[in-house]
Length: 234
Ligand code: SAH
Image (cartoon, rainbow, N blue to C red):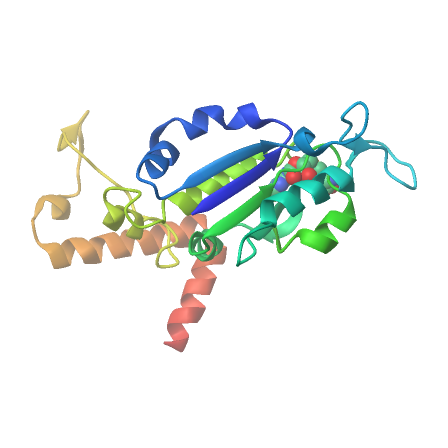
């Protein structure tokens, strides 16, 4: 997978690029991550990338020209055009289903907004997908890009050593993951549920499912309702 990121703050990606999952994916040749500074494509005298909004109002807007030039450069020369994603609070809400879909696409371009956002003409001309990571406003698209990148990368086969572990995570079967325990079997008077050390795989699986159902119903009634609807149809 190739991910090209356009940002005004490339250094924000440094730690993430050189540690753990993203590092491993790159070392294994499964991910190529390119972080580009938007100012590289600024052509004005002071390398300005933003300007005041037409119609007035507070804040600044990212100008179309540097982004158009960047996107011309980064999409050129490929047989299949990369998928261009812009991170914005008005986008489609990110979830596990969307991450799966994205992780099957080979080449991505991520645009990280700043200030008030980007000129609408960039969205109209270049952007295939708009993604939000939640109903709140951050100062830039860098964290949303990293959230999406990490979520996508761990779904690439052989990036994480134990892919089975990812398959038992929350949302995989439309439920939250149940409680987890490790050694010691008793800690400060609290015992691990007996069934977990019974060695009886079917019973353990039933227990885990039951706890996952309980937890989802309690903490995420919205997911619970969806689960019930789906399973009724089945
Ligand atoms: N004026 C915009 C918010 C701008 S925040 C609005 O009202 O919707 C500045 C930048 O941060 C945005 O361009 C976007 O790239 C990013 N951003 C902020 N919150 C985000 C979120 N919840 N999801 C995805 N991107 C976000």
